[in-house]
Image 1 (cartoon, one colour):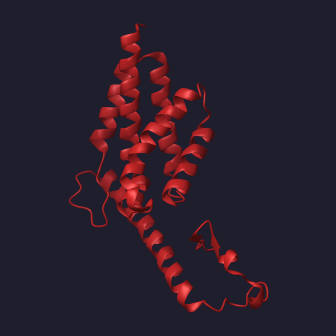
Image 2 (cartoon, one colour):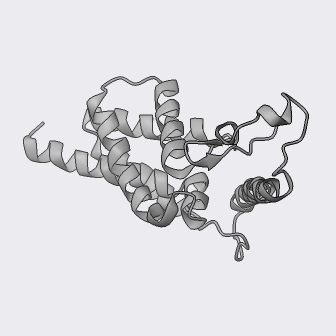
Image 3 (cartoon, rainbow, N blue to C red):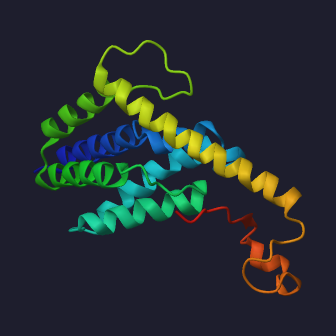
Length: 193
């Protein structure tokens, strides 16, 4: 394969990675709701390059490694734990693209990217008319996830006001210090199921 052709395939791989990430509802919701702070959109764009570089630097990644990497980026950059089952799907999609890239198969990369862009549906709290049932199903599950996120955030807000005296469920309330509630500058509001 000539150097020019290799560069072209690299460009196609990068475009595919970005398309897959842009079509990922969990990331869309995190960006739209500013879970990554004021620079959420910039972080999402940076994420594409970070994922592309990660694959290039690590020739044969296992699916779990890709999932862990993406999961960590979402947690660290967007304060989001992805629990909608989409992490393995997106990770597998990216791995398949990387395999096409390694083989120099630009056509397969173009087809995958086109397919993703075709299926991509803008996720919003109130979906517009959807033409395909599968898209509607996806949006419903994303809305549910969004509602869960919002509920968790609201719980956090009320917890700060109502529970200024911590509930005596665990250790003696007098022994609970501020550090127990706040970690790394954010309040932990994960509820036990």
